[in-house]
Image (tube, rainbow, N blue to C red):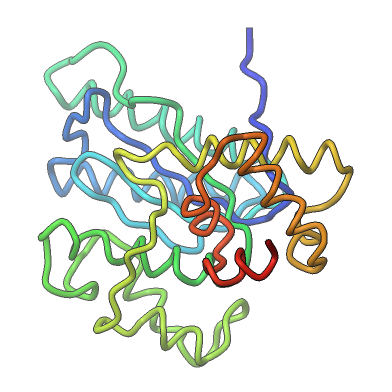
Length: 244
């Protein structure tokens, strides 16, 4: 029986992460990384999505995807991962069994500031892991390709591109990684609120009363701490205090 497509907030940008089963180093060789990258490029032509940024590490991969169809995202990731699993099992002396921990983990990007910082976070992964000194030293990320378009990019302004491509700026944002799952719980609570109030995600950030109501719902009804709410909604503690 086919699995149902996941439900997400009303957004076009998704931060996706895939990880090896039992944290296995499924991208431990450069030819393995090259194969996964080749599959991303090959199958993107079949679906209505755009890859904004990516980084392939030894046991996981981060991808930032733009799409208006969650079904297209699910089909794309299924196609890429199933193709890679066959390749990996064959290359590992006819290995059998699962290759990936899950289909994939993902989180919706809620606003423009999170989008910009998510790209920075993805490109920063090799530096954070001690693989390289700078983002530009790493071969298996979109950093160099992305930053070549610094003066001619269709999504970001020149100033935003300069922020993303400035290797001296360190971002410590808590996007999904190999250990984190807390955002999934918050997103499910936000989705519950949106359905209950019959609103769109952008209305939360355009209407002070709706934002205030959401914060109260997350804290009182869903028992989510204010610090987590700040992180997920990309607002300051001062904003929450003023709304309270």
